[in-house]
Length: 419
Picture (cartoon, rainbow, N blue to C red):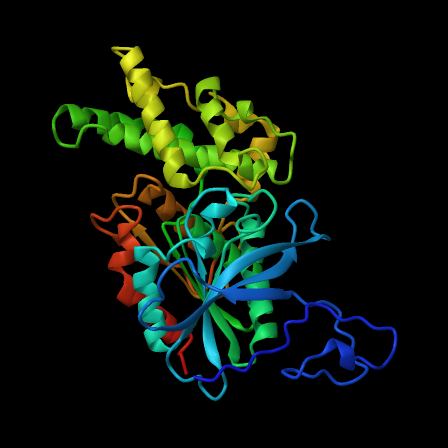
C-alpha cells in the first residue's frame, strides 16, 4: 500500500509571494497561495496496543477544533486513523468516523492512549476488511489539555467534523464522502454529527447505538422504578446479588461526568447542585486536580459501588434507592436545565439516513427512552427518510451493537459503498 502524505505544516502565512520555505516536497502549494486556516497539527505512531488484523497502520493525530468555552478559540484535540490493507480506490478510500462511548475525563482515558477495545475492535475489523478508513476522535479535552465537555452535543459533533477536515489535509488518498457511527456517549455524538453535518453533501449517513439522551428524565423518572424492580428481583433470586448497586453506580457515574461537562464551559459550577454531599465527594475525583488527571469510568463506577455497599452496611434496613445521590430538584437549577435541554440529541429534523440500534435490556439507556426519541424525530419533526429503530431483544447496553455488526456494515455499504 502506498500512502500519499500531504504536508504536515499547520499554518504558513507570509506577507510576500514567496512561500516555498513553508512547503515540503510532499505537497507544494502554488506560489502566492495563502492558507487561511489549517486544522491538522501532527501525527505519531499508535503504540498503545496491537493493530486489528485487517489494519495496515494506525496513527494518532492531533488537530484543531473550536473550544466549547469560546467558539472563536481553537483548541488541540487528538484521535486515531486506521488504514485498511486494501488498495485505495482510484477516487480514494471512504471514511467512517467512530465516536467512542464513555471512558472518563482524564487524558489517560482517551482511546488513542489505550488498547482498542473488544467491541470496537470487532466492528473495526469488519469495516477495514470492506476497505473503509476509520477516523476515531478522542473528543475535546481528552488526550489533550483542557476539561472534557462530556455530553456536550456541539463539542462532540465538532470533534468529528474537524477530525474529518484535518485528515483530508494530511492525506490525499481519502474520498470526500464519509459516514458516522457511535455507541452510548458516542451514539449521542453521532446524532450530534447528524445534526451539524446535515447540510454537508459529503456526509452520507449515521448509525447511533444506545445513544445517550434524556439523562435528567432517566435519573428522576425511570431509574427509581427500574432499580426498585431489580431490588425485588434480587430478593427473589432472579438477579444476582449486587445488580441494583451496579446499575445505580453506573448512573451516578454518568451524572458526575455530566457535572464535569458543565464545568468545561462554566468553571464556577458547583457539583452540589447536582449531587448530595456523599455522592458529590466522589464526583470531585472525576475532574481531578487539573481537569486532565481525573479517574476513568471503570474506576469511578467501582468507587460508587463500594460507597453504596458501605452505605447499606452502615444503614441496615435501607435500600440502594436510599443512598444520597442526586439532589431532589437538580434539574430545576437553571444551569443544569439549560445543559439538559441544549444537549438533548435529535431535536432537529434530519435529512440523511439514520440507523438506531438499541438493546431492550439496556439499564444505562432504557429502550423506551430511545423509542420516544426516534418517534419524536420521525412523527413530530418529520425526519425524512425516517430514522430506522432496531430494538434488539435481550441485549444489554453494550451487547446490542455487537449483535448488529453485520447489519451496520450493510447499512454503510448501502449508503456509502467502499468503492
